[in-house]
Image (cartoon, rainbow, N blue to C red; front, top):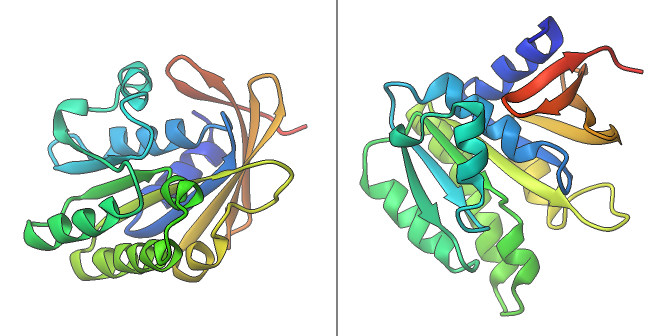
Length: 198
């Protein structure tokens, strides 16, 4: 892995709340799992999935230590209340990944869904500050939108933001904000291979 990509991964793996967003198949889950590979050997980590167990195959491919990762399945936005309660009752995880944080609220039609989502994002920020943990929240961009649905809480509480863009078949660009670091890479079976930006 080249220097820009290594710096990007170190930034996302640092303590605090990172938001990684981009369209479908931009590399959000892979980036989160590469952070897990860095932080979860010998440390308890939590993977919160909103899309079932699809991430497991990718976790094995990139070498994420799935034996050190607890998994919490979020089916709807109300499961976030159970997640917050569970995190409040146990010793802190070194890393919490929520993939994809805005999916349950995008599917929700019940009143109060957006508020519960916002409180969950705020809790994750507080959790990181109190415990010294790292949290990575992925968020999918859909359609012609430049930002994920329910963007304001993510922008408000993030310590750092990574925008992933598709540049062509397998070629991706990551922009780290507020640092302004840019890295380009190709998706590979083992994760990312850095490449010069076009």
